Length: 539
Image (cartoon, rainbow, N blue to C red):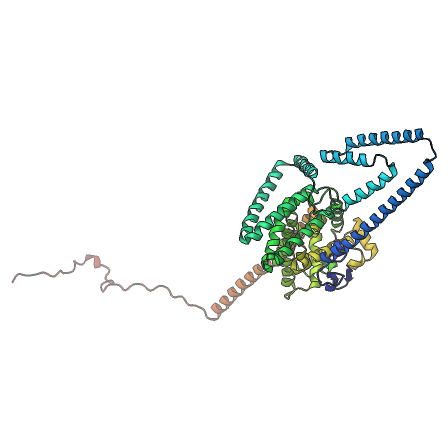
């Protein structure tokens, strides 16, 4: 997809998110811009073309072998009978030795041995070159046999043996125990869910068990072929639910979600980041790339998010948590749910910052910033796992498909990010990538803690200390100002009181003495007789 870089921000036309074949569904960079439906059609066309070319090559080789055999027979007719018997005996002896050696390196069974004996009897008199052409045809039939066909008894036995060996090589019993508990729980939930479907539920369960057995016996297939099996299975079951069992569309969607959960919970450890792919290598490359871009600031990406607002900062943390939590899920639908929750937190953060609904042009740069800041583990493996084994209807339409397509675009942008994408000169971009300098030193006013791990925590702590220092200085200044205001107020009140007292002096008279008794002036009053007391006379 064509990602553009403009001064106003990273912009992707919404039409570029759709399938390039024009079907109206969402495309995907992993499918070369096609939706899952169109990609499967193109894949089948290319595969059929390759099969046809291989068959034509095999037929041509067989014709050449037959012509060479006919010419050799005409030239050998004049030779002696003894020489012919000697050559025949030599050829048979050589064939016997080759067959004996092959037995040491190939799995044998009674059916296989019987078949080999029959072929040896039929082809005993044929030369080696014609037998090689027949072997090529037989090998092509085995290679291009549809994976949905049931395996032979020998393959069943070999598959069971291989499964036991892989389980014996499990890294930890606790991990296996946890996976077993989760598998049992999902199985019980799936059975309880199918009970509501009655007869169709029984057929669905049989189809799922048959598919799981087939996948267990086809572990040697490439991951693309296993993905093709899963997509075919989803399509077949959905068609049967709609046509044969006449299930309503809303119940079909719920049933497909439960089927995907049941199937992929059991197949997760075999199909997620398999050793036969380079998914792990891509994971390490993306992680290394994101670490190298730790210096990218929100201003460079034109991210319309202000993390100084507490609510916005919380939304950013939740978005990072959701995108990291995606790796802990086992079902593709659950991984998509994590991407959807992350995207909704991003939209809320933009809405709070701008006080208006977020647009698609605001969403993609912010999503890129969240991925750079969070550096999700095994990002490419999770994207490939969702692409290969998710129900295709979820990726082609709906908000899950839209958000997943934007995540793929964000990862593609990070992988191809250059100086022009960030509106920087090539010289500055090279210095930032090599660590010679940091944009934070040149743009101290727009400093933002966007680095990772220890450096991120250090920058965040320095920012916090700087803010606390400024707040402390401001508080001290305000406290001194308040102290001065209080002193001035006290002095003013004191002066006003003094002025009033001076203008209106207060005369404080001495305390008046208590009134004396009538004879208080008699100095010798102590010599007077006591006052007369009333007396009662008896009459």
